[in-house]
Amino acid sequence: MTPAMAETASPAETFIASRWTKGNLFFPTRISVNRLRVSRIKPRLFGSNEESIAIGQVASVHISTGMIWSDIVIESSAGTDPLSSHGHRKKDAQRIRDLIEGYQAASHSGGAPPGAIGR
Image (cartoon, rainbow, N blue to C red; front, side, top):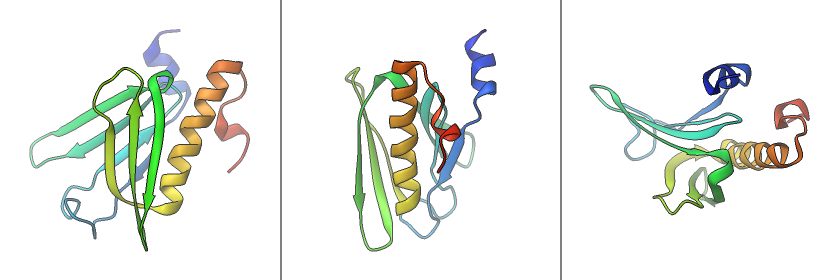
């Protein structure tokens, strides 16, 4: 099975930052997580900027919560710049962390993906 086929077999969950937060009014940042990678997509007027880290290369996930919104920083063990995004709901930030940790655990144990366990 090719990586493209594997990715379509595992649908991604996408989390969109709130338009009420700085830098997200017209083009809100999206974080997409699937069993292969976590991606940060920042749309622009013409095109978009996408960065991704393979699930196996994620070293840590930091969540900083405020009154309403959360900031999330996903660090890579490969030494590249971390993926960061602000303006996500607390519940979404926690779900992103849980998905990443679940996919990492499943890849190490060969078990079921985290979506099969429940939310």
